[in-house]
Each structure stands twice: as C-alpha cells, then as structure tokens.
Length: 164
Length: 419
Ligand code: SF4
Image 1 (cartoon, protein in one colour):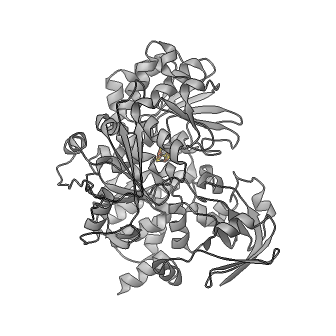
Image 2: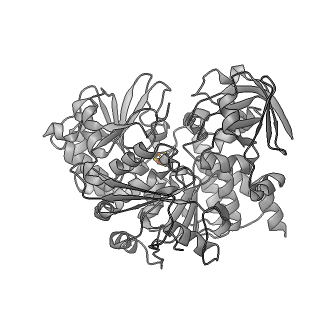
C-alpha cells in the first residue's frame, strides 16, 4: 500500500491528551472524535489538513493514556499515516491493532519539513520525501506484527482463531 | 543466566521455563480491566465477534470511574454499556456508584490483585499493581476485547531496569517524590518499552500505599510495567483482603538489567513536576508559584495514607482565600475510613470540599476543571497541556503534604514553611 500526503510537523513527546483531549472522551464515535484531532497541540489542525496528509513527529509520539481514541481520531480524520522518531508503547500497540499505519524513522522524522510531500511504501518500508527528493528506510515491523497487519488487525485475527 | 521478577511472571504465564527480553509471547491473563472510557470500544468490538461468553466471569473488571457519577448524557450512555454488558454476560466485578472507586485504588483494595498475577487493563496506569509483585500493564481497548474473548494476549518481553533506593526518607518525602525523582532523572521516555524494578532499603521502609504510588507512575517514564518484590508488608496487605493462593517471585542474583540506577533516598526532597511533563521536576522549596486550585486524590495519591498526611498539614489551618481545595478519596472504603477518622472535619474546617470517589478533574473530566491561565497543584500523575481543563491552564504534580501546604499558603511550598 502506498500513502501520499503533505507533512504536518510536531515535536517530541506529543501525548494522547493533545491528540484527543479527555473532555471529548464521553463518546467513542470515530466521526465525533475526528473533529478534535490534535486540538490541544494545534487548535486549527483540522481546518488545515487534507485527506491523506501525514503527521511527522519527534520521539515518544502518543505517550500518556491508553486511549485508543487517539489512533482512532487520527484514522477517522483521514490522515494516512504517522511518521515519528519513536512511538510510546501503548500507542504503537493500539495503532497496529486498529490498522493505523505508523512508521518509525529517526532521519525522516528529523529532516522532513512542514508541508513537504511524502510518499510511504508500507510493504517496502520506504519513505520518499518528494519535495526534497530523498528516500529513507523505515524500521521494519517484527514478523508477528506483519502477520497482524496482514490479517487486518487484532480482532480479525481473533475472529479467525475462534472459528478454528 | 538468572531472570528478573518480570521475566519469571511472563514465563509462568506462557508455559515456559524461561523467557528472554525481546521474545514475543502469548500469555494467559489473570485479570482484564476496563473503565467507562475504554470499555465501550472494547464491548463494541467484543459484540462483533458473535460469541456468547467471555473467557472467565471472575477475571474481568469493569470499573466506571472516570466521568462518574455520570457527568452528562453521553457519559451516562457509556456507563450504561458497561452495566448492560455485565448483566448480559454475568461479569462478577462490575462496580457502580456507591461501590465504585478509582480503578487502580479499588482493585488492590478488593483483593483482586495478588503477587505473581498477570494483569492487563485498558488504562495506562494499570502498571500500578506491580507494587504487589504482579506484572501489570496498560493496553488499548482492542487488546481488552481480544483478552475478554480468549483470556490471552501478546507481549514482547521487556528488558528490565533496576532502581535502587538506599538510605532513609526525609520528613514529608514519599513514594511520590521517589518516582518523580526517577522520572526527572531518566525522562518521560527513559524507560520506554522496559520494566522498572524498584528495590533498596528505602523501598523496604515504604508503605504498600507508597509503592502503589510509585508503580502507578512507571508509565510516566514510558515503562511497560513497574514492579516490586512482594515482601511481608505486601503479603499482609493481600492476605487481609483475599484467601486466594498466590506466588511470590524474586529476581535472581544473576538477573540481567539493561541499566541499574542507584539513588540515596535521603538526598531526595519533596518535588514538584512543572508543566507540561512529569520530568520537569524541581524542589517544592524553591518554587513559590502562585496557585488557584489544589486537588488531592486520584489513583496516584487518593488513598487513606495520603488523606491522613494532607489532614496532618491542614489541621487547624485555613485554605488561602485565593485557592480552592478539592479532596477526592479514591474509593468508597477510603471515604468511609477518612470520615471515621475525622479527616473530613479537618478538610471542611480548612474550607476545602470533599468529593465522592471519581477520577473527575484528574483527566479534565468534571469536578474541578481549570479556566484559562489557572494553575493547580495536584497529587495526580500527569501535567500535560490541557490535562485538567483549558489548554492554557497549568498542572503542577506533588505529594499530598506539599499539596496541602500549598493550599494554605496560596503558592507552591514545602510543608516545613508552616512550622
Ligand atoms: S485517577 Fe486519573 S490517572 Fe488515575 S485512572 Fe483516573 S483519570 Fe486515570
């Protein structure tokens, strides 16, 4: 799968309260949550983005609470992917489980500028900065997770196992 | 090669003699937790599986604590999902208003947490239970749904980091300060993907409550879990609440650690974590920041010991006229105990208020939201942007003694200043 979009840059340690503030967690409706994506990091974020855009951030992206609402909001906001230097553990797990593409690459995270056009090839694990004409290799997923992604997330895997 | 407590518990739950850091394992879980924010998503996913039973009626805990007593219609609907699901499947450990408390204070108190258990919860502070020698970690709602169906979950075995606290604690220094000191030292991703094991003479002196506070904040350093060996104090705590058998694991002498850090507890002062990260620690004594609100409560510091400490500082004093003090006992039992001991009189005479058990303001939910520009000292665990209200409000994390002294003085202060 190839993803393409404009980069929106964020710093280190972006936490789940910034991605989707707790004041909106009295619902779990993806469309409702999407309206407030990244609101406390950038109040105008949802007005600025277009479908397929990509979040590019520093280290420890998604730290803080275990709320799956964070990757759900990003996905429902029709962002195509998150590239970061590193991800917080539960956010990483949740993204894989629900099928939000996430990519770890220190170089890409550092060298991408706001507004750069980025192309991500998930199978090859390649990130192309179209604007700068530079290619980066993403850290590959372990085989177990590749299997999870291929099966369409954790619940689909459980479904197929329960049927056995 | 020896193993750590964390490795031993994980090995025991995937039917192996040993595991190594980096191994991907599928493990049986002893308890699966969800709350009114995370469980609704898990319930929807579970229902889509089309099965008619959960893996074990006694090994699932559904705790509506975040927006309860229901703060609005939407939260009422969320809690109703938990209530209906519990009835439909016969979930034993569902606790409603009047019985409920903040999840991570409630489960240990009910005796549902025992040494050697493997616990996952759709809440990041599930790491709290490591204080009793259990492996416990936060996961997402989908993980919770899968575990409710299968009783199993996957893990990557973490490397362990060891933190040794030697010496004794100075007056007014608590578990909160030890963990803030640790996070201040290693940073908010200093233990990313790792187990944090705490040991040393100062830890042995610490109460079970103090250890629960420390393990609670392991996630604030990025840790997968925090863990303590269950000693006599921990066993006594567990035995007084549960008749179930349990297994105490200890790390082997030759266990491998990615890193060992040693601290002299006596050199640690009451600390405050400045906005907007728990790693921004400074001595309370040097702060002096003017404040508008103080919150004493949460899964970090809303236990009876915390309320006693706060009342000790507040007794015979009044809260500063520019400050609102909100005290929130973490569970119904703590509430009752505090009332019996006369602590409520102290809080009320000081002109603070006492709330029913709830997460409430800790996550900016209800019961004490901050306006733009306001500053709050809280005994909670996170001071992220907008955590307790307006994105331009500020949260300062501290222990209950510092919080109480700051409430009296109207600025962040060391309790010594009141003497
Ligand atoms: S008290 Fe705060 S940190 Fe603890 S479970 Fe509730 S919201 Fe989370």
